[in-house]
Length: 274
Image 1 (cartoon, one colour):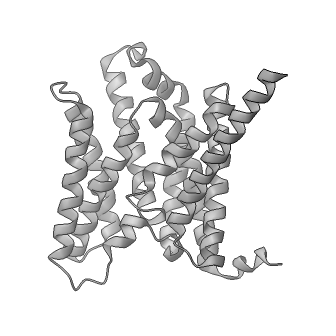
Image 2 (cartoon, rainbow, N blue to C red):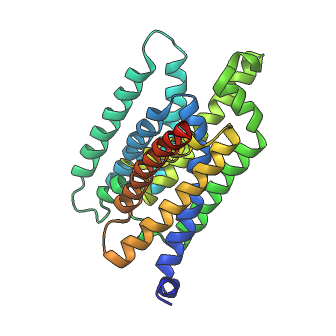
């Protein structure tokens, strides 16, 4: 069959496997990120991760590994700066966001002859994922999913009423863990969707599911379904229509958002008239 053709190609199988797991963990974490009003944090960490990419290019070592290290360090730094309370968190995020991208561009420029392209990490390259990267990304996605499920109630409390966690040390532990989970998702998303677009996988599915959900759990299920569908459709469009995978995935999500808005509008209008 026409659609089964893709399974003849190993790179498409790897892309679909990584894409589905990434879609699930970003949708789950995205509900907490949106509820905590920290959507900009994902973009900030993605840009600071690019410092690790640039440093890897400059030192001619693994850009992906240094991107993970850079993201985790940046997450801890952002948590510490936000606790100082003397400057707006959004302003600190913007400082790190723009500074990270500027540093990455400088480091890549200093080593022009390196075959690694910064564009791969800016916009993603899911179709070029290797077997090693597939196992690594799936493992990290499973770690994020398992952590969210194990500490579900604690993260809910952190997002909606952190003072209820009680002891300050408990709040600190969950705050740092939450930032690290975002950092892990961003690290995976760099190669899958790109640092400039990873925020969309966290936010847009949540916005699509919200009008149709009556609970936080229901919104999670809805956003996971939407994210997985958009990921699969985007990858298929990339293969059959020769378009960039990252752009087709995000544009599919935006298309779902517009359709859900129209459907919800007419759905409410129909029952209001009934």
